[in-house]
Image (cartoon, rainbow over all chains, first blue to last red; front, side):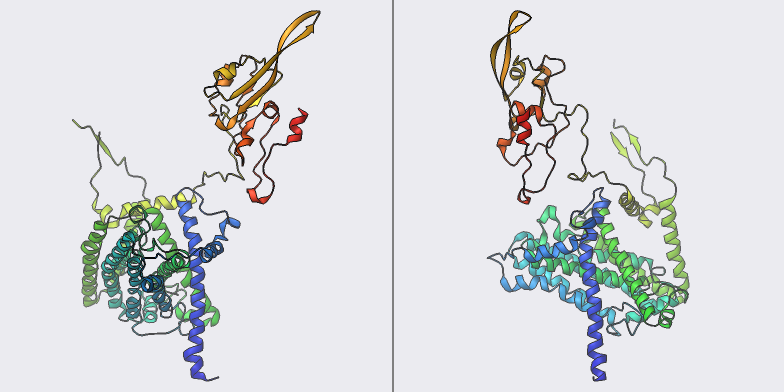
Length: 377
Length: 177
């Protein structure tokens, strides 16, 4: 067979398909994991009826989605209504081509030197599907959900992008592979860029419309938000898109701040060189490390959902524009000063001290009774 | 009463300790044992004074109808006839129960009939700890004298109505009594 064909078509497609299948399995499993974990955290059991420990729920849900009647409202704008659930899926799928999920070149589908920009551009198009779906349903609650989603995603796209700038400044590259290689030689980026990491974590929750930022689908206010009128597979497509985007964003935070497929800092531990030395096995280990890290962040989404109450919409906007964006800008400024002074190592200590302080205050023995009763006269 | 909370300290605000405390709480909940009882497989034992299904004793009953009088919604139906029997050369008139029915589907389990019963021990009582009284037919919930006395234990959950046999009281066992 033609060698060029193998290099440029067959291998990339095969690699993409493998990654794609793994991601789809994670999406299907996340449905059960999320419901079960949410239940356990809320002092109940969660779905446990289908199969052992409720594991067959993973299969039962898709079957239900496929067999359900697909209702299209008669007053819906047909083209946009059908397009709505498909649009958020496309960018989520395409982005998996750009994320390196193992040591290159075997475990990267493509290596684009502006990969990060491309990913940002693609992921921000996911909001179109939600707006279109909400508008085309011809339902005021759906429309409001779509509009809220649009406002929220536009607002949080800014701190999302700005938080990445700090990482770009210290790594000096938009190429995701280079960013990971930088992190294994120096420290993982969440240490020097702890503020950026925090902003990224918050805005990726907001980007995905997850609690505490799930105002577009706030069931107590908007029935179900933008997907009120959707049923059966179309609804499943919305869910698929949302969970795929969650995996995309988790992959991004792992790649940018938590060392991608490596498990080492300062050149020690399981770095790319070590993994490459082990051949294919090393590659598989790297990919496993990557997906385990991604799973941890997916569990973090569920953890946040179980813990935090929903924001009010104006509070959400305040947080985005008045807090996150100035903080992200300040982070860029401070990072710039440190780089200018050539004191990049000093930034690690900021991260380490912050984490140590938080851990100290969190785990130190209980404070004295936290409230004082004042009798009203 | 006003509750005054201490002002948030700088460290609390800067390190987001409130949020972290919340996360800690949910994480702790995750590993706590759950109190959920998985009903068809696991059952809870009711308290001793729980008012469950009726139990009736024909031998103890003196057919005084006090329970029927006490019943606030009149769902106890009693028919009695007199019989003369010879006991030690003397003729004696006794009441014999013909009918003792309870329309359990309308019952609210107030146990006033049990309170009114003058016999000792009571000839109608509700402390049987049986609460699985659901039925697929409301006519199944009208109990006559034999059914009230010999149901022993309500049949356990056997499955959905389409699965085959419906949970039913064993008629042959009732007739023997």
